[in-house]
Length: 347
Image (cartoon, rainbow, N blue to C red; front, side, top):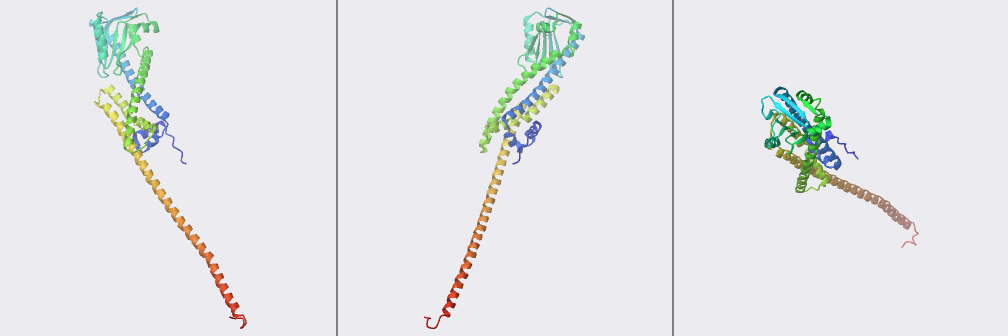
């Protein structure tokens, strides 16, 4: 019996995207292996997205550093309170990076709670941004409903920083000094994204598996739920890869596809329907081949039976011939004996 070919991760990706005929191999995969497969893709997906957002965060920090170097008159930090004094004397400063779609808001001059609240609401309403307040910094990206907050007090306790001036702030905002903060931001984004997209992917798989089950019923095919689950899971391969590409393009160019999510689900649905129909066609083909084999076997059995009957008939004929010869010989002997009797004995 031919052993089943081992499917590596890359082979599964290739089959999932390009080879509908081999989806039946994926359908028979162990459920845990399928779960591991989609988890790996999900981790790669989250790493790319978290990496892009971390890159944007680093760019925003560099923009702040450049702005402070050129446009800020003085900076003081003492008792966990930051005060940024711009050269133009404005209470609230806004720095926009249009290419990356990031806005940085510096609001450390005002004591008006309403203006502070307005700045917080503004940072919540935009896609990507950083809000620098007197007592904390808030970081927002388009995937987060609520900005991530970092209290200056926590930073002070962690890094033992009590007093800062403008030059020391500039030194702190260098990439090398900011590495722990950048790595922390990356880790938070990665964990958050993995949880969010894991739940979203599970929901997609459940809905797609229901659709796959319906398609199988309509096609008059009986598939185990494990097979339906596998087909639904592997059908997400191309949409997720396209999602990664689209996210990168969108992040750096601003290019958007209005109904991308609809296309995401549509592609997976097309893969499911096509894969199930291909499996059905293959099953029908196998059934036809099996029927032909059975018919040939029946013909062979009939031919063997005819040959056996013919051989038995020949054997019977061969057995009857000696009997006929013996009878003929016996009759001849009787006639001869009768002819040799004396004349008086003949009747």
